[in-house]
Structures are given as C-alpha cells and as structure tokens.
Image (cartoon, rainbow, N blue to C red):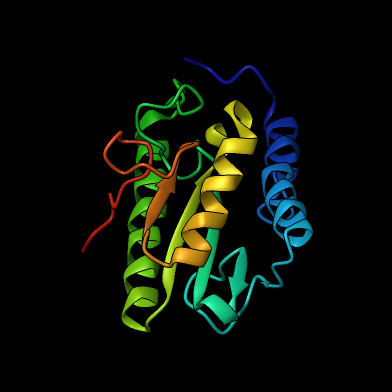
Length: 162
C-alpha cells in the first residue's frame, strides 16, 4: 500500500510527535503534584530518562504511548499497513530497549512503574489513584497500570520480569 502523504508532509507529521510533555504525561504530573508528590522530570542520569523520578520513594515512572511501545491487546496499537516490516523492526527495538532500561533500573534498586496512555484515557481517576498507591506501597515494581491496583484481576501486572 502506498503512503497517502508526500514524503515532506509525512516527515513534518512525524516531526510533530512529542516524546516529552505529552498530554498523558502532563495529566500524571498534575495529579501527583496535587497529591503532594515531588519529582524530577526526564533525569539524564538514569537509564531510559524516566518521565518522572520520585527519589523519596526510589520510584521511576514511564508514561508510555500505546503505539510507540507496542501495548499488546490495546485498541491504540495497530501495526501500520505501509512499510510493515520497517515498523515492526522499529517498534520491536523500542520494546527491547524499554525492557533493558527497566531491568537496569531495577538492578539499581528503583521501582519501575509504567502508565499506559489507553488507561489514562479510559479511566484516569482510577488509574492515577492506583498509581499513587503503588508509589507509596512500593510493591508494584514494573507494573503496568490499567485503572486498578489489583494484580489478580490482570489490571496491574509484572509483565516485564527479566
């Protein structure tokens, strides 16, 4: 299938996609700040430059876009129909790199929390409340938040153990 945009238009569109200060990330930051949490943003000294670093709780938070991080079984992740092999390779590299960063951070003693874009869209209050519980309890290392802190219901899980 041929791309519907000219190369210059496609290049411009792709250049406008932000990696920092996205709407879901800003929503998480505002919520946590209102709850009294203080954090650093995009710490260059840590693997993966986590979106938020809460030193007091030895916790880092990544706010992941479902497409760019290949969120499985998510309606926001669909492999593009053009240049499929190129996209598959690129997105798989992103996923492998994420797992490597999470492992490195855990080895340094950090709790790694992941907030998915789709969960923020679907139920922001429940997702963010679950996040605050995970931060203060420090027991959901490498969790993916889906709006509930219950690991048994499959909404928060340790899916990237390595």
